[in-house]
Length: 331
Image 1 (cartoon, rainbow, N blue to C red):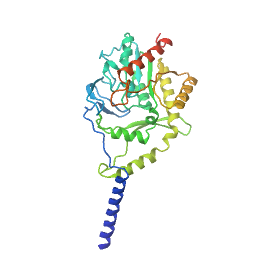
Image 2 (image 1 turned 30 degrees about the vertical axis):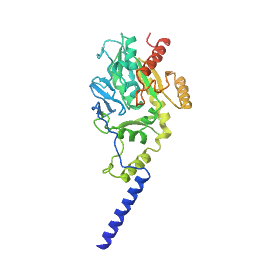
Image 3 (image 1 turned 90 degrees about the vertical axis):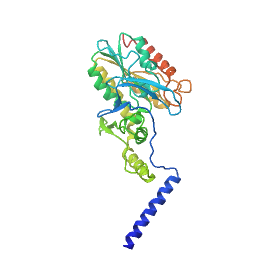
Image 4 (image 1 turned 120 degrees about the vertical axis):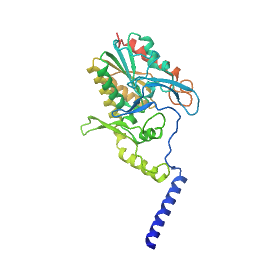
């Protein structure tokens, strides 16, 4: 009996010492980024999540009290100031992440809404979703282009971070879990891409970050989660660029199959070498693209947040609009 007590005491003491050491070196128990925003995303078995129908006043940053009006339709699409859908008109479909959705600006301030003002004879659908990568955008496109039969043009808003999201890198899954109380009904899961032995694209069911009991009380548990997630996702970094190219090529082919033109819009990219590599790929595959990057600074960013403000969206709108007209994509 004494031996059992001694062994148990030694284990408990060791755990206490390891826990104390981890906290001392900066590894803290798991904590969520809290938010008072309403739940605006609902779970989706294919996409992971999508926006929930309704109008919401959103506090974009905890550092400011400014609220933004965001209105969503029944299929998760961001509505513009007209708040209506006209199915008889020829359509333009936008897909992408939060830059395309217009996180941080009001309904009428998104570049998609501003484009609607120049194309009143078209029904414009904004299926951009906060946090989406290319895999989710591809799935959304496949669903919606079959429903909206008169689609003439598909526009994909592309940013550098989509590479991480497309293969569900551990760091991205961790961020989604950390921010899961920012409008999500559940811990977000994300569908992701892998490549088979012949480098064919494979889309996998949504997965999320590992959640173990006592994670909010123990640095040891938090470290175990982090090490485990990095281990099971470690090979994904090597394929993220090729997988992303294949996802974009799929978008192009889906659009073409449905008698629609496809345009990729580069909205944000910091790695110039990587950016040029993608441009060569687009040119080789005859994929329409336009580089609409802007300088994201205090003049063009939402205060306290890394998303473009109304001025930034106006700059995006002008760039996209000019390319459409110069290349006669709708004429």
